[in-house]
Length: 527
Image (tube, rainbow, N blue to C red; front, side):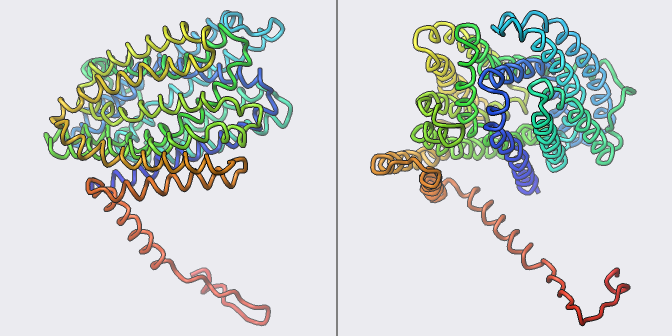
């Protein structure tokens, strides 16, 4: 039962993330063409502003996910209802705060970020509209948190897929109509409102007693949310410092156009972590459920398997980007960005380090042992900012990338993994035998193969780059699945193959097409 639930969650998470990432990767060259380098840089900064605005969530969404999972597992529906109502009241206030904050900072930020004087008025209105979008997104957080806490990943991710296609369609229509960046940002407002309505409707249909409403809030539920969400807010804030601050620092020390190549390199580098996140997101509510049942053995198994899978996903992606990053940039957005391959490589290693620690962070959040993680994340985030300010003027964009890599690597190796192993009672010998060796050894083989392939071939065409990436992934997958520790992964793949074959075998035969001289009975067809 648990394996099926986790598998369903992972597959639906991957489908949603693939839709989101794939859609915006395809649209990026179109956006560059329509907005230009400066316009795209401003769009990146607006996106970063929005991500900082989402911090108004203050970790409450994660708290709702955890406690909904725990209360439902224990049959405490009344406590779950009180939790939802309390969260709705809080998020309504936070949405209003997002609107006010957007209006407050709009006149100031364009000047700080070096926007040209003639474009500052439009930039201010763009920030105001970004605040509106942040407010709508915060307002829909309780609905998505309830769906995730109930582990209804199919509905949660289905709503995100619909939202992605709606947003992409609205953006393309706005740009083709000549609306520019202003029309593009405005197009997100109705798309987000539609997503909000869909999420609330899904909760009402799935769990009517947990539907989004004000009545039923209690002080105890509010205190429980606040107590758990504080460290989560620190973790999320620190993540913004590491992921969404470099662009602001670049805009302060370099021309605005320098933001664009860094943002493109980061978008490629974080692909591996984006996939890892979809695998390990299901572990947080699952860990809460297992912790509520005091099932330590299963909790250890989840941690080991999730950590191994996280490395197994991030390592081949990192190898491909380290060796082929410049070629991929050239094929994706044009030869003018070919020289930024080293930037992609450094950022890919940084995001691989972040991917490795993700399972530990999710599980420690699920069992409410995440205060050490919060403190570590805050130190890493502040270090990232300080190093970026120091290194960017000295060695350029690669300095900002190193400022992301160094704190992430130290935090992963020296704090997060040791603390998780100690808390979950996993010895280093077991971690090496069941996590590091099975997931890390095939990466060395794949790296040597891709290096040799690059030495012998000029990977200038799309076909050769794709072939190199697929061959690397295939070699890694064969080595990974051949390891004795990867038994869970082999069983999951076997289950998928069996399920797919059963689906094919049970598929009804296609109806025969009637020729012009054949008659048919409409009553039988209707039946």
